[in-house]
Image (cartoon, rainbow, N blue to C red):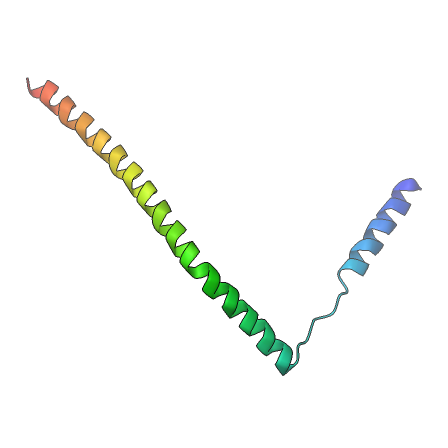
Length: 83
């Protein structure tokens, strides 16, 4: 009986939570949202580009170092094999 009540309450909660209708904006509200979005995007764009460049530089250096280390080991192995 408790399981049935719990299941019924859970099902009721899911149905109530999912019945929110779509939000419709008028022309003025859409322009406001668009201008706020563009303003935030313009503020964040340089910061994101800078962090992307920094991350790329750090990752590229790590990858190049890793490849260089593997290649040096291969060269040393080839030298030992031909000695």
